[in-house]
Amino acid sequence: MKRRSLLTAAAASAAASALPKPAISQGRLRWRMVTTWPKNFPGLGTGANLLAELIGRMSDGRLEVEVYGAGEIVPAFESMDAVSSGTVEMGHGAPYYWKGKVPAAQFIASLPFGLTAQEQNAWFYYGDGQKLADEVYAQMNAKFFPSGNTGVQMGGWFNKEINSLADYDGLKMRIPGLGGEVVKAAGGVVVNLPGGEIMPALQSGSIDATEWVGPYNDLAFGFYKVARYYYYPGWHEPATVLDNFINLDAWNKLPDDLKAIVEAANRAVNLSVLSEFQARNNDSLDQLVNKHGVEVRRFPDEVLSGLGKVAGEVLTALADQDPLSRRVLDNILAFRKKAISWAQVSEQSYMTARLLPFDYARPSQG
Image 1 (tube, rainbow, N blue to C red):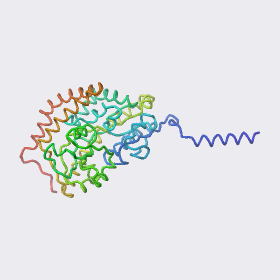
Image 2 (image 1 turned 90 degrees about the vertical axis):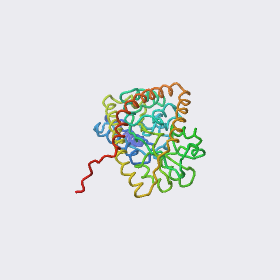
Image 3 (image 1 turned 180 degrees about the vertical axis):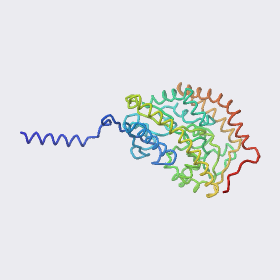
Image 4 (image 1 turned 120 degrees about the vertical axis):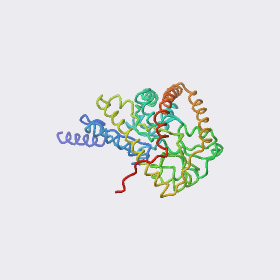
């Protein structure tokens, strides 16, 4: 009998060891984060990595987060489903990817001709942005944090010139979010692809044009090898928010100090990612133009004015489809109106002054 008891205990121990380890071990949490980005992709994937690293360090290992790139656990656009269901605890992507689940999410990402990155952060931290975003994400059983920003993007890569709004007619373009809705309304055929699928689509001709982010990320993907013209400005995404979304049940179970750490880590990453894009875009644009011979073009004013008019019509129509979208858009537009008034006498005025033709200090040659 004693031998039988020992065998039974050993079998039970072996069976227990085969089961998944609990999420909590001696007061320490182990979370998984799925992302919509290719693993370790510059700026985007590395931003998610930094978030996980900061949370682990700031919590002294009490909350550790393991990061998985798109496709490692779930496909890129199924990240929110994995988090909502509790399959994983955390995700990293961009709000417009979830418009099919909650339409108001696309307004949080970036508005065509909308807020700049600095204005967007001001809306989240000192306006109603965080509160409204939490309301939107609660419908997906998730907690929201802004977790990076690309700043003003480029207008996209094209193999034909864009001289009028009519040139968008029939154009097959990869462009997500509200910008995609505007291009569709202008006659384009919009294709939504995750980052890792864009280059093959351009090479095969299944799309004619694409936007992605800006020089830093676009150089990494090598779009200059297959597209001739690089247009600016990025009217469609002047300040694209990256989102850290957390399963709401997992979030609510966190003690207050760990919640504060996650929030602080996201604020740090939000600034860091934006700053990295600014610094890297400077050098990357220089490489694209001077090393790879990319032809950089500005959209004509006629095109920008036309897109702006279409954008206004599209935003109004989409927001009128549900009350939450209308509340989010109205709140952003009210903030935008005040931001424009201040920007005219601050940033915009200064930028114009900086371009005046006066001699200025030159870098030392020594």
